[in-house]
Image (tube, rainbow, N blue to C red; front, side, top):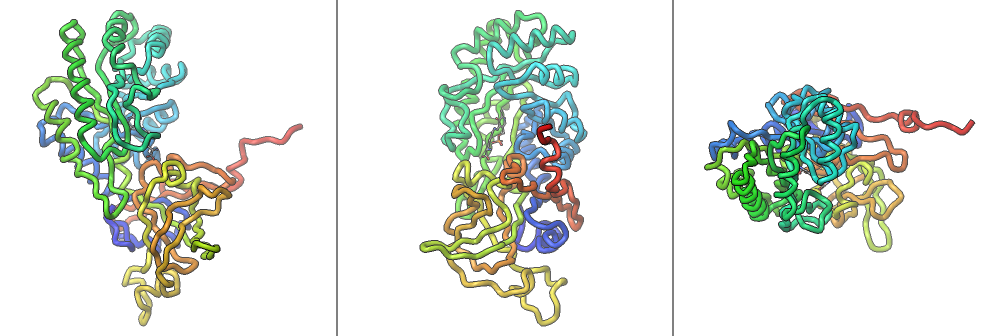
Amino acid sequence: MHQDGLHVEGVALADVAARFGTPCYVYSRAALTAAYAAYRDALQAHGLADRSLICYAVKANSNLAILNVFARLGAGFDIVSGGELARVLAAGGAADKIVFSGVGKSRAEMRAALEAGIHCFNVESASELDQLSEVAGAVGRRAPVSLRVNPDVDAKTHPYISTGLKTAKFGVAFGDAFELYRRAAALPHIAVKGIDCHIGSQLLDPAPAAEAADKVLALVDRLAAAGIALEHIDLGGGMGIQYHADEPAPAASDYLAPMLEKLAARREKLVFEPGRSLVGNAGLLLTRVEVLKSGAEKHFAVVDAAMNDLMRPALYDAWHDIVRVGACPPAKRNPGQTESDTATGTAAGTPMSYEIVGPVCESGDFLGHDRQLALKEGDLLAILSAGAYGMSMASNYNTRPRAAEVMIDGDAVHLIRRREEIPQLFALESLLP
Ligand code: LLP
């Protein structure tokens, strides 16, 4: 995200906090648009844009306004549940640009997707293929299918988000795929359309994805020789982003080039499923320092966001840069006030190493370790690169209402999700009679 510690696009973060409170997710429409354009331009550079479908992976951030921004840009969507299907349709996404991934689709989800008329099911097992054929028969349709193959390639990322090794639950074992395609081609209610592969997330080295593509293309050719011609190749998502100021991520064009070079001379249509790379750097989590306290060994800044709002640090030990939102825009400054006086009404504290933690009752509830910051109680902090897998993984743990979400578009501020209210959190529960 382009932000200078003060603004997202034309809007001061201090103003966002004053209007909508904290914790609050803040997204930049311009950054979403730029990330999508970078992906599309990389395809264009290899002459592939016209036969490619960029299916945004909804799980990364499923807010309707974000889905709608991508739908308006012409994107398709990669979904993993009936809930995500409903969201995409509610956001104006085109059903025939949806691919449906996931190892455990229910029959109800299959039916809903068939009735909506999605582009393709990414099938991950022989049993799923049989179940899908049965459901398709019952609703009188043929289900468009890709097999998700597991190429046994090490994505060299965090083990929890590495999906392409043969020990993973994902996909059809590479050695079984050819036979399963033959079976699929013979099923009356299945239309074999493509092949799919996704080896993991937050990949910074392009080599594993290129290696997986090689394996997939060899299988496509072998299938063609056996009379099973595929219309499209889906190479999944996974491109990593920059989380740390000192650890840059490759540009989309550089990351994708080794893979795209292999595809340029072919005839199949292409599908991609990027999630994080389209939204991650387009969002931040705005939070306020509630309490500063010093333990026997460490200094703590207790903020009003917690692991329930942003789970990535607790779950993956993930790093997000954290900056102090130190100043109001000059126009809002009273005469005589200095920049560092304005945001919080107090000057910055003394720089020291802080543990940035939330109010949740777990030692795993941290947002950043050992952050060198000059803080006062009441300060606003921005937790950067939180647009992907932030709000979409948020929970109500400790009966904490989920944060508000705001989209900045130039000078305009749009509330795209109201902060939850406490009565809503137990509205579905009942007392015993
Ligand atoms: N396609 C499939 C089948 C996937 O499973 C995923 C992500 C994607 C596409 C999108 O991958 P991306 O482009 O975002 O890397 N919660 C974790 C990430 C989990 C990724 C799950 N699958 C995190 O916060 O790092």
